[in-house]
Length: 578
Image (tube, rainbow, N blue to C red; front, side):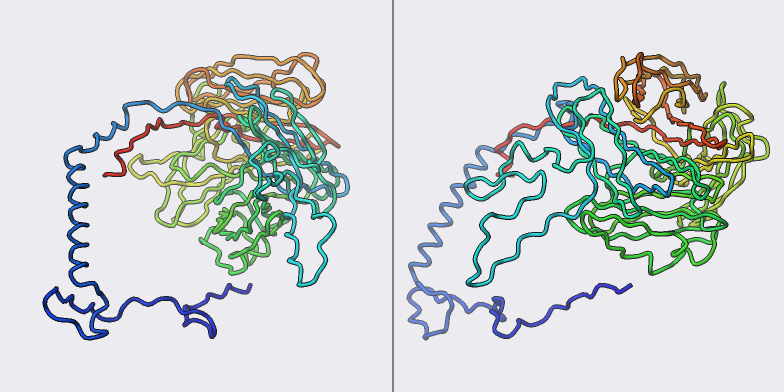
C-alpha cells in the first residue's frame, strides 16, 4: 500500500509573498529628549518627548485599572460540589449497521425501536438509510459559462439556505432523508424492514432525535439456508467509534471471517487492523492505513492479513482519523455462522452471559496486553451462584498474545454465564475475551454463536427483533441478588405491552422465555431495567430451527445511555480579571 507523502517546510514559492520576518537584531536604543537629533535611520522608534508622554499616560491608565482590580478583587470561585449536576435525556442517538450478506437463500431484516420515555422531550424523528457518498459539490463555472437554470439539489436532509446564503438551523436538519429505508413514527412500537439486497449492498446508518433518541436501538438479523454459510447471524448495531475489540476470529480450516467497516460520516476515515495470535501481533503493512471514504462500506477478509492459518485471533480496529462502524463476521463452513460482537473495553474481569443449557461445545479465546501476562480464574454462573468447572479452573495468557481452551459441554444442561477474573487480585491485567458456543441438532447439524465480555444493563437496556415463541432472555447477577423488570413492547403489527419482574440470586443466572405482548403481531422489543441489586448482565437468544439445523444467535444487552449528567454552570464576570 502506498504510504502518504509528507511535505517539508520550504521557502516561499516564486511569485508568492514571503511571510513577515521577526527583526534579526536588538532594537536600537531610544534617545531621550535633549540628547540631540538622532541620525536618519538610526532608530526604529521616533517621537522624542511625545513618546515619553504617551508612555507615562499609558502607565497612569494601567495603574488606575490595576488599582481598581486590587481594590475590588474577584469573588472566590464556587466550590465544585456546591450544586449537584442534573440529569437530562439525550437528544440525538446514532447507530451504524454492517453490510448485509444474503447469499442465494438468505434474508436480512433490520428492526429499529425506541422505548417510551419518561422525560419531557417531544417530537423528533427516527430513521435508517443505506450508507451513501455525500453529494459532490457543484463544479465552479468557467469564465463565460452559462449558469444552470436551476441549482443542483442539496443532499437529503440539508437545511434550506437563508436569505444570507447560510444554512438555516432549522427544522429540516434532522428530518429523515427521502430515500430512508426505515422511519420510526413513535416510541414504543418497533419497525422492521428488509435490508438492501445484492452482493454489493452497503451498510446502513440510523439516527433518532427528540423523544425517539433515548434508548434508540437497531438489530440486524440474517438467516441463510444454503449449505455454505448455513445458519443465523445477528447483532445490535453500534455507534460509530474509534476503537473496537473482537476475540474469537480465525483463519484456520473452513473459517471465512471478515471485518466490515462502514463510514457514515462526511469525512474520510483512516483505519488500522491489528491482529493478535498465539505468537503475538501479526505484522502486516496491508492492515494499516486503510482509507474508508465518506458514505462507503468495505469488507476485509482476515486470511489476506494473517499470513497463514491462525486458529484463534483477537482483532483490534483502530481508527486514526474520523470514525467508523465496525463489525466482524465469522463463518465456519456448514458448522455455523454469526457476527462476533464487539467486546467491552479491556478490563481485569469480563463476564459473558448467554450460554444455553443445550450447549454441545464451547471454546474460550482470551487476549492479554503487551505490557503483562494474565492469570485468570474461570467461573460459571449457575442457578445458585458462581462455581468453578472441573478440569477448566484457570487459563494463563502471555503478554501480547492470545490463548484458547476448549471447555466442551461446560454447562452440563443448565443455563449459565461465564466470568474471567484475576487469580491474584494484586495482579489485575486488563483482557479481552470471547466465547464460541455450538448447538447441535438431532441429525448432527449445528450452528454457532459468539459471546463476548458484556457491560451491565444499568438503568435500562433494550434489544429489538424478538419473535413469538423463539426468544429466550438470560439474566446473570455479577454481584448481589437483583430484581429486574422486563417489558415486552407492542409488536410491529400490533399488540399490548407486557411486563414481568424477575428475581436473580447473587452470582446466579436465570433464563426465561421472553414475555410476549398480548395480541402480538410482528416483531417486538425487550427492555430490561434494574430495579435493585446487581449489577446485572443480560443476553437474548433468538432460536429459529430450519432444515434440522438449530439456528440461533445471541446478543448481549447494554445500558442504553439514554440520559446524561449535565453540570450546573453560573455566570462569573470576574473570570476576566483572574
